[in-house]
Image (cartoon, rainbow, N blue to C red; front, top):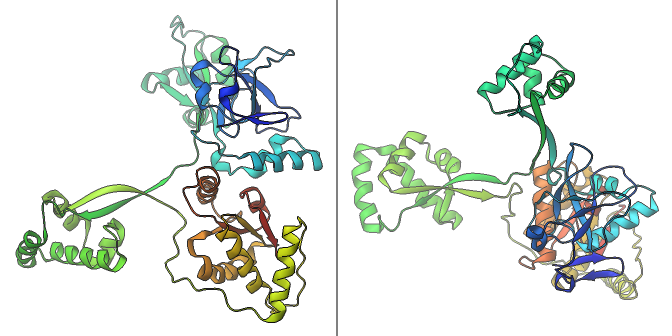
Length: 427
């Protein structure tokens, strides 16, 4: 864990615990400045640059903001508010990414919040939604309420809180803010903000064999009985054993098992009830793993060897290398050699393309060489898929739990990676 300061990042143990702690945060708004919030003592351990925190901005609005730096200097221009919650155990944005964001905000004359909106996957940005509840101090005198106001008040008898969307549906009105404001002014309602996490991991039902209670001999006897009395259950077990061996997996997707066996949920539920099979929820990546065999790079010809040598020399001297060649002259094969070397050194690689349409054919070709080390990141991926790629790259950079990756994509992929090597393929 590190804290950002003007002249670099310092370890948290150097912070004086007796002093007040403050954070400068980036809000997802086109504002020219960062804003300072105080960190309550019980939240200090979890706060570091790059983590998301929930803060109140204005009278009622609540946002998820990114901690940019931590310090002890209280703001002089305004009364400081406290951080409401810390959302992450580890940073979702790294120091290197912040450096890129800062450069972009200065070069393009835009706010850091605008860069954050462009860079951070939308599923990592939390949504704030107004909720209304009854005011416990209301004196129950409803004589002054209009028909619409009374309907809202009555609806809160059956549900403790309502969103503005729900109020709009109840009243069949497009604009309900005047009604809600009137109820707040009459002390009938309280309005508060709830922050909702948009990214949700995908879970699938998987089936496994209860080998403890049904070893091979017991299972064989059972299947002999089922073959006569319940053939669908017998077929389902046989299909499970076949898939488990073929895929070299202990657990099989419920949907795949039913599809391949030609059975149904009734037969499966019967086996689950008997304890022969076990069911559980398993988190699954939305981006499917590469199942094919990897092939080594092709042998380069003398001209490619020379180009590779000169490119590596440019990198060693901290220069940009320009590889010029006509179509089908072997540029991509040279890239493959260069990428493999950098990945083997534990570095990340970003392969930039001018348009998304060009990625499909390249993905097929590059996956044969790099398999699951190849990640794709572009705007045609849904927000859940982009978060999973983002998180894989973070794990690679922060925890070192996974191997180095290469990322291929168009413009938006610039924000995803911490790559030391970038390939801008203009064809």
